[in-house]
Length: 185
Image (cartoon, rainbow, N blue to C red; front, side, top):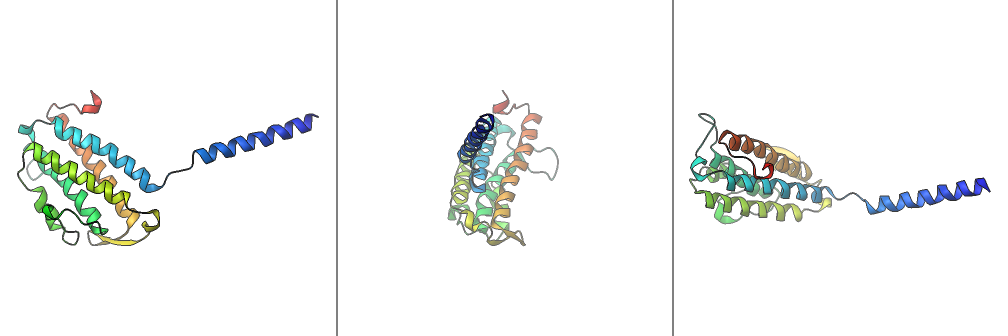
């Protein structure tokens, strides 16, 4: 009797465990990256709004990007990196995936705060749409990015880590200008 109960208990445990594994199936890497991009977008756009416009020309040192240039650099690469994978940027940006210099021109524009925030929002919509249209089956496809050979997956990972790199930079810029990141208040 005891052996039958132990066997029944073990079988029930296996069934319950199998059910919980199915319920927690891993999501695809593109879904995970989309969730991450949405989170970093809220923070970068939040900082762009929180930093006063008069501080947009602030730089920590000679030869280092200003607040405005960092924000526009983020926007430009949100257009450029997907363009290298075949996702056409808005022609109004002037950015082409086969010419990295076009992104540099984009980020050097002297725009006001509202226009910079609008460019960020448009660029984030583009990167989210492009990433969302990337199937897991296409992640192994080769692409050329910055003169190097990448898989599509590696290019997307670069895009996401690039956003985090500049989020950190913008946090330092904000704090150097006595601006507390909105999510830290």
